[in-house]
Length: 265
Figure (cartoon, rainbow, N blue to C red):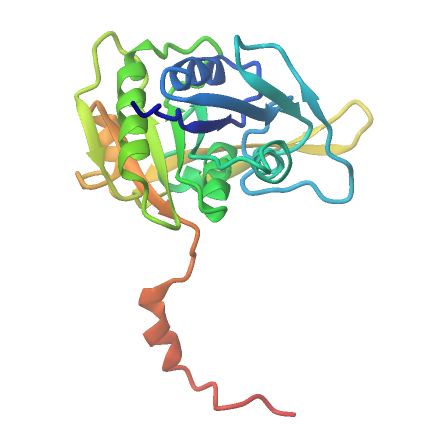
């Protein structure tokens, strides 16, 4: 009789190793495989794909979770994945990277700023199937129970079927509103953006400082193929994201520019 090998799952996030979201994700992943946690020791939201350079990284064993090999890192979410891949688990094959569960949406343009999704994308860069999970609720005590079954279902399918090379999945889950989600939709990223404002203020020493705020503008509001539509209508959205940022559709147009065959000497 053959003995099945449990998959090795790396868990990380950007809200910090003590957040409720990562506690929930670790609990779920232990049902599916052997879990190793490498996560930031403090909140790292909005860090995008930043890495730590010019100062040392600190890595410490922790005992926050039960029966889990776990570490907290002084760096960014991407630092955590890099340290896990090349130091903590350098002699072991990681079967899946999962990042989250983020407190707050990472749909549409937010994916570019997200530490949660940057960790998942770094996993994909390393050739590891990777998923970022986010809940559209910024509260520290957000309700995650309605998302559990879907997270397990999506993760199981990723483990069984794999994820296309060069791709990470951006999964966003509607906030709990007293009823179950309607289902799961595979979507594209909505054409949406933030229109920022900066509030200029003066500190007690007479120096200027600024608070950034803004309005979220969805230019795809009526299009059912987008992640924003899915979330607004009670569905979980899955957007496959790639780290190849080449604008292939623009190559032909830019090739028509009069650039000549060579630059002047």
